[in-house]
Image (cartoon, rainbow, N blue to C red):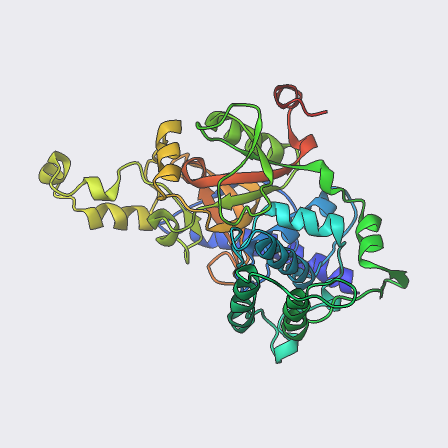
Length: 403
């Protein structure tokens, strides 16, 4: 019954999207025509937890299992967060604080957790249950553990128990037990008993099948490197390709039925202006460049006019160069803000192309938690993507030397 309900939820997301598309068809605003849409599970809400890596990574593997014909799964994000937080705490201690301890992370964290600790169903560790809630709130947890990790990381000498285990890590673990719950050693699912590791193995997922891809100029092409983000604390590698190839890889994956994990900057005005309306764009004319310009003089258009125009209806999109993208990363304009799931493609009435994105902020906008991101925005603000290696074309596999 639970699986049926979840399948209906996944179907409902698609139905609501089409209903909204039909509703918008009589408006003057953005009108989207869906080109390709892959099945996904229902939208979740990370609420007051900086665990987008967890929610998006979990959404990704749930979508992967739908692609593989394995049915609908609902995995516990709290199990993933628990194990990753403790790994990160130990890494911070071992590096004397050179690795930051925080709630954030990357797709590699989810792959590492499921490969080393396994997976568990949502009912085994639900968000908020330890403090009488149904949603995550890790604010107090971090307020407790951040100083504990800092004290251990900067200590000249740490005490250990009779089994040579650090007392500091045991103390940090106990706080996570209180706020997130204790991970189950064994549980039943659909009439069978599992451990977290055997449950992961039963799904047919293999963490080694997934790769991350990026496109920067400061590293050699078709090699791997660890993208320099504080949240990439595991130093997980990404394959480096050209910017055009990054989009081509994403398009090829969606066209051939593979979901795409998306790590991006969402602090841009083009994201914020359309957040509630369900779109994310990169207007061709930069708002800041209009003031005092000849165009502004003769058309009477002010910065706010262009901003309002792009916020109310489609406009031509800005197609950045690889050099512009690189500068945005190097000068800290582009930041590793948020991870999401791409599961489709679409166009607006001007012909601008978009990706369909599943977010993890609950039912916060007109599309009930998903939105349309222009490929122009994706081109400029993507940090990395995660895909199954079979989502690559034969030619790209050969370039990257992937079997």
